[in-house]
Length: 87
Image 1: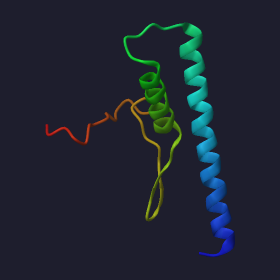
Image 2: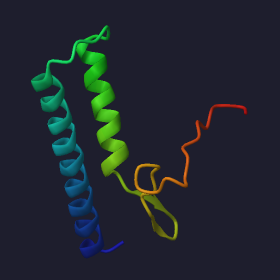
Image 3: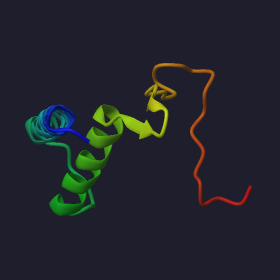
């Protein structure tokens, strides 16, 4: 790779990380503002907020390029499957 490609890749990664962080912060702030009581600890709720933010903001890259970010929220015909589930 040349230097231009490397700098473009670094900028893309930075922007993606920034989008995830902003989404995480907004989800966390909303949860704290609403004062939702839960049996789970705050650390676990924070981790769940982070996972959801990454799921919404991260792009999936493959050898041929970027795969579209398809989720059931955007396309109700698609259902999420647990890859570890046998049936």
